[in-house]
Length: 436
Ligand code: NAD
Image 1 (cartoon, rainbow, N blue to C red):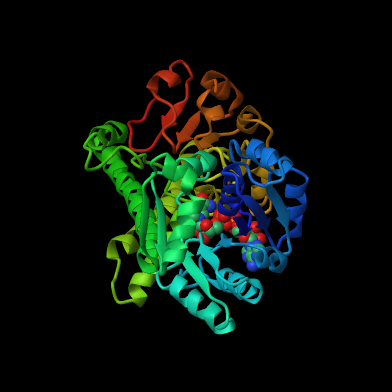
Image 2 (cartoon, protein in one colour):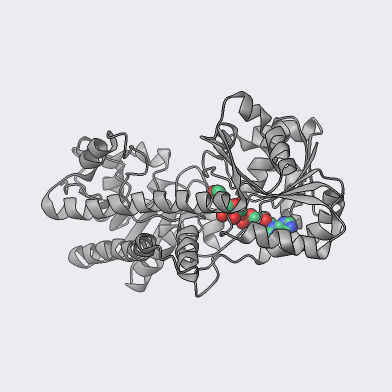
């Protein structure tokens, strides 16, 4: 079975490499020649733990190749995965399907009879049926199957998530599509990973409802954190106890600066927009979207207010990526918070172990530092925005000595009172008491 993977971003590259690891012949296609050149040279274009080793091994063994030639690849493929981006459309928050439609048109022109076309990208309900009709219109003579196979991997642990998912969701309209998916996911099937075979529409809704629910959980605990701050509570104690209830679960109950990343912000906006469009308002998620936007602003205001109070002129920002173990900065809280600090007249020094390259092109007038210690040197305030392991191990006494001020804002609740002992720092975290 030959697999074509269209789009070699976080999802496409990880999926392509992992399907090669399953033993299939995989050709990854991207329209960006720079990405393809680098991948051909054995260079991994995204930071994702464990990916480089699998990529190099499967490419060396001849199961994994990279190209910009979509038509040629598709013409020879039995299963064609589409993993192109579905960003937010400016203005209304709806998912922008232009890349899906463009890929579908190119696939239609080149596919062989009985090809199985699988949309892995996150697409709003109805998209698979529309794409199926679009391709059928373009090639009424050629039979094909359409499959919706949303991806649930998380950046930072994407390889592990792909190889050991909680479940695989497959939406189909015919038996051939279901059979093809059973074959490609057979190695997981053998490990007893549940495979949900359902309709195209259900698969599409499952993906959005899952992300919307998780985003709602994060937003919920953020508001609990606000209450803890006012009432003298501790959100970590509260989250731990409520999370022990199996009906609630302990994951996604970490208070912070508001969710960001390449999925939750755009997917909650698109889900809410779909609800409006279909006259089935998703009012909870509408609220989640606006509460989360406001939260990022209020986090910046906390720091600005503290700077006014203490006369601090500069802030050392530790962490730009929207979460650790990725170089992805899309909609990261740092991209809202840093410009707000600058607008208030504060200068910003910043460090991130992996995201600097991506950040440099979108954040301006930032002094980029090679280490966290270099960043805090002379800073009036230190602001921790991403919980990279390297920051957990910081020597806070050294941080305090290097800084010109003594305020540490930890918006990821990485440290505890003991870590602060003897540091002389005034420690502000989220939903927990002030220390120092
Ligand atoms: P990405 O932006 O990192 O990568 C998309 C790639 O597709 C780009 O490299 C682009 O050049 C390429 N591309 C676009 N049109 C093309 C075409 N016609 N032919 C060939 N290549 C083309 O995107 P991503 O983060 O991998 O996300 C892809 C999809 O998966 C989105 O719908 C996203 O919502 C979904 N998803 C993402 C994640 C995640 O953690 N990133 C997780 C689950 C689902």
